[in-house]
Length: 275
Image 1 (cartoon, rainbow, N blue to C red):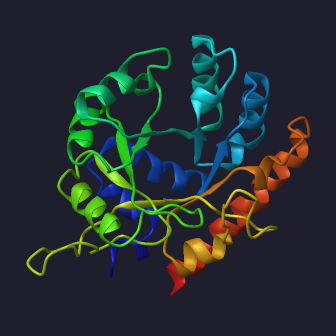
Image 2 (image 1 turned 90 degrees about the vertical axis):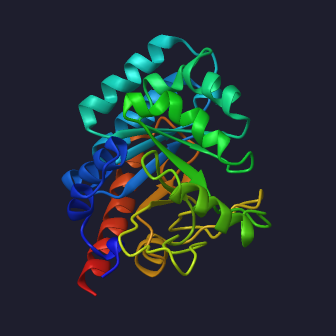
């Protein structure tokens, strides 16, 4: 039996990285594999959406650098909501520089991401040094890293040999790299014949999930929670505009959409377990 076919709780018990364990335990506890990507520019909208969806998500994904008039107090409020609603925080920073630079970007500057975000991510383009740099900051804080091995946009270059190399890099740094942003399981990809990957359990967080549309004008492509969780074996569905739409003041409707996606994602997981 491959690891992803086991329950989230069983998989959590076998994780050594604190962030991976925390995410799996939160998913199990809340019976939600839904992450909401809060891609808005006004802090008031940002916090209102998070407060509305918080009860129904395992994880909130942020792009902290798009927020206007950023103040450190916003992070205090974000952490308070994380405690209130019991969710993990994932700053979608997509680091893509040399080790020394990403270590400074992660630890310092205005946002000090490592001090508050349980999980972050990086492009593997610079090679293993990007993991080394981020690990030097994140490991002492119990953080986890995701690598972007695939993307959900049309024409993405992250495929083939690129994806294989990303998985090899992760496999060499399993204490800190906890999984991937991807569209399918990465188990065994890029492994040599002599490598055993039977107990490999990288988490797969998948963007491009929608129930009502198939794409947008900027190349995004959407699949349903059932396709992502059941058919492709992914672990967390990432939804943004499908939950909060265009009117951020409609918090009751936003909460209803979050419940809808949580139900669809969780039912797909239960069906996966039953097979």
